[in-house]
Length: 286
Image 1 (spheres, rainbow, N blue to C red):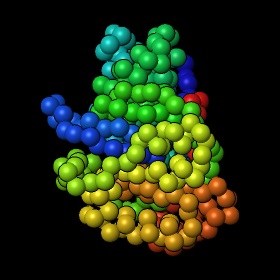
Image 2: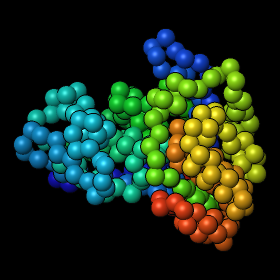
Image 3: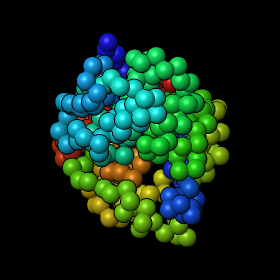
Image 4: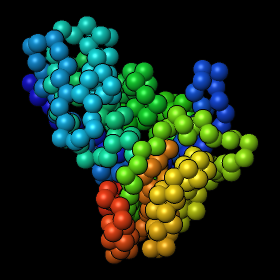
């Protein structure tokens, strides 16, 4: 038995950090949406009771550090499955980029095994399982566009934004999410107007969406990593209607309604950044 599942990347249209919780996590409020940049997960049932990961991408762990491995392991333990699974990851989403590539792989694995092993779990039950793996996995189970609260696991689905072009650029640096949160000074940051973003999406008002883009983690990452700041400035100079860093970075994305402008931004970034992508916003659950 074999099944193939698409695992799309996400971008943050708004990311707010409210306070540090007693459990050590931060309370967040994020508006996230999926884009048409995706890994493809192929799951094959095996008689042997093992989990095997192989990937087309470099820097992808093939052991329990991999979130797709953790997802399969969680399903096997919770539902006492004795068969094994081979997980092949056709890697298109850049690694450690702030685009939830690993989380989306885990979510796709949960959804795929639910079908492959006929578990009969609802999307809500899969999202609850996903929350045990990582903060973005619950959102990735739902896909589409959503408001995420708590540490990211409390999901409210919302309408999709109007379709547009998304150009992403990831510099060849690594950013530690834990370090970014540790250096974040909540008393000093400007917080996004999440309600304004939700209203803009509800009204399908593209200009208001661009005006409401905000990510409090930029206050740390842009200061610590000049490469990220430079990409954001270049995208603005090249005429993007909206520009924002996704997650804790280092990927920055720009929004534009015009294919010709998206192409110009893409070409302008290719000169100094190896990982540049020009895709469409998905916005709806598949």
